[in-house]
Structures are given as structure tokens and as C-alpha cells.
Image (cartoon, rainbow, N blue to C red):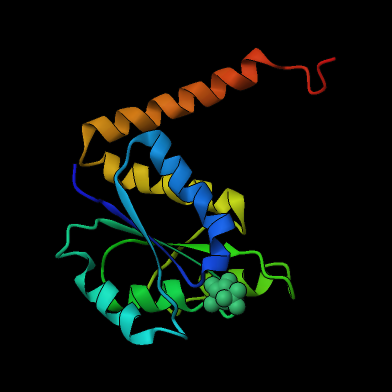
Length: 163
Ligand code: RP5
């Protein structure tokens, strides 16, 4: 199967968060690529990545960034592919800066903004699976099975502190 999801991040320092997105995509069997693309340090690369993603076969972009997190919004400005933004937890402001930078887009250019940190990275992958599942039956099935396993794990262990 060809690469369907582009997982990009502003810095290699974002990997500790964004690896949770790729691990979830792995679990679902969704082919992806991963790459550092910085809105501020490599702006020309950001433009070419966003402009070429659709023609390369990418169908969803997951973009993680922290601080002045302009990557998801600028990518969304350059492609009409769905862009899912993951706010990385920053040291100075605990990710509130990242969250607001990604969520507060002007009307006309949407970014689907997830939670700060690991939960957002995992959910970005699951959201990508939901989008792709409309077109690919096997990916919809993989997502349904992921959710069923998750439910069963909770039901199987109702004791919060098994001793
Ligand atoms: C952002 O600046 C990145 O997304 C990262 O979260 C943050 C800090 O980057 P480094 O200075 O650690 O490379 O562009």
C-alpha cells in the first residue's frame, strides 16, 4: 500500500511526542512517512512539502509543533488536504502557546487541532484512520478493531490498583 499519511514536525525535539502518532499508525497498519519540516528554519521546504503532498499520494497530514507553532497552519494554507495539528508541550508555557497557535486559525483555513502532547499525537493518528476509513475498508476495520481491543482492556481490568 502506498504512503497515505505525512507525519511532519517542527524539530527533531518533537519526536518524543510525535512518535506516539507513528506508533499508532503502525498498530493500525497505515503506511506513513515522517520528516522534520520547520516553518521557521526551513520555510521553503514547508512550501514544497505542502504543495507536492497530494500529487505524491498523501491523503492526510499530521503536523506537530511547539511554541510559536506555525507549521500546521502554514501547511494548511498551502494544501487542501486535511491537516491535523498536534500541539507539542513546550517548556516555557506547557504547550498552551502551541495549542493556541494551532487552534486559533482564521476562518477559511482549518486545522483539526488535537490535545497537547501524547494524547493529541495518538488521537491524530486515530483521526487520520477515521478519514481514511471512509475510502479504505481495511483501514476502517483496523480502526474498529483497535477500539474494540481498547474497550475490552478496560472491561477486563476494572480494578484501578490490582494488587
Ligand atoms: C518548534 O520549536 C518545534 O516544533 C519545537 O517544538 C520547538 C523547539 O524546537 P527546538 O529548539 O527544540 O529545535 O519549531
